[in-house]
Length: 284
Image 1 (cartoon, one colour):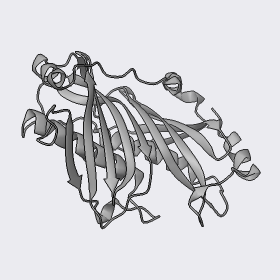
Image 2 (cartoon, rainbow, N blue to C red; image 1 turned 180 degrees about the horizontal axis):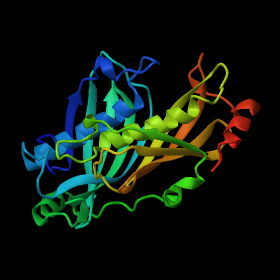
Image 3 (cartoon, rainbow, N blue to C red; image 1 turned 120 degrees about the horizontal axis):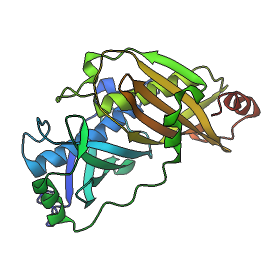
């Protein structure tokens, strides 16, 4: 997608973390790290389709699914260099992979499958858009990995933890839809609302990966229902599955891999019996 890549399949650039991107651990917050992937992806699309590609009153690319790996912490005060790679495109969707690097270290990877939306509904990619992608990569998107967690979207009553969130004006994007960034923050808030009541002693928790399936982006001013539950418990990690639902139905559902860490070494630590007992009470 730029002069450095003759095929046009790769776009590179740099982003600067902001002071307000930090969390209480003094590294870039995971939802803000997710937004860096969004920004890199959007810059690649603007480079491909022109300066107005960031908004649309016609078809607009939106994520169907995004799988994000948080490989290392990233920090304020140093640029993050990104690489966006076009993996494949069909008439139905396109797959983009973004990598984030800081100080020559890979800090994050995201695979995103994007579909075209018009008037809140999925439509085929416009022919010109499809042709642009296929001219650079003559391949279909990879098949999405199994999304067994999506079954939980069918019955929110089954989740052990429920909370209500009041949507904000800032949750809408430039096309007056519920933004991808807002829905990712909703997933973070659902996790926090659950984990703040889990006593982990002198250990810490980090998110290693997050897999979000997006179902719709319709805006509304009515409260959003957030739900969470534990879907798997391992030796040093566990899975939190959560979702967000409005009067228009389920917005998104996500599976997050949480790792227990030793705060002195920042290395994974075994889940203690006390933590395991608390997590079992939150089982789906």
